[in-house]
Image (cartoon, helix red, strand yellow):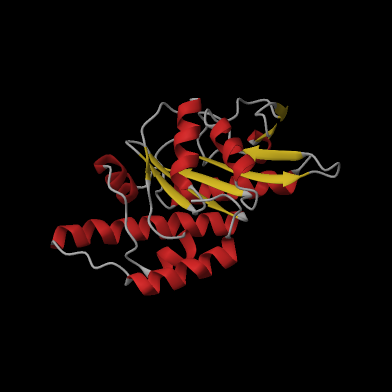
Amino acid sequence: MWDSQKQEVLKAAQQMSQRGFVVGTSGNVSLHFKDSEGRDLVAITPSGRDYDTMKPNDIVMVDLEGQRIEGELTPSVETMLHTGIYKVRKKVNAIIHTHPIYGSIIAVAGLEIPAILDDQVTQIGGEIRVAPYALSGSPEMTGNVIAALGPRNAVLLANHGAISVGRNMREAFTMCQLLEKTARIYVFALGLGKVNLVPADAAEVEKAYFKAVYGESQTD
């Protein structure tokens, strides 16, 4: 069952690996949808499996409580992080957790990325925050990430990696790419010793655009 959803998750996971956003079996991808009975389900990558040999039937189906509905393998250790975000962010239907190089550099340094690019503000929602460190799969990690993500579409995880979200898988993958592009530019700008922010008045207009397109009921 749910072949199309499994294929979509698998394709995104393999693209994530091929683009160098993860190494080995790290990272995870999920897709939230409703089945024919109206149940909220999540298709998520399994734990400890190589992406290049992963098959559609390796994708695990869980409910929003993380209970396995279908699949022989163990779902990602960070399943509760994914379901936690879906519960809070009602418009989010895809989540990609990566370990990108430049994003991870910023996450290790514990630096928030301010509003430095127009597309960062209009698509991610503004500054990119860093969630405080917590062990993978822990309730603390889920809480920290949800708080730091807020209504935006990307967040960094201290000493760990990044989370990007979207209304669909294509959008979530775009946010992965935009986050890493923004982080790379910020690292190089810091190296040059000068970072100019998007002017405050322009940033406010762009944030209003973001809210109109992606807006959630959750407050910042």
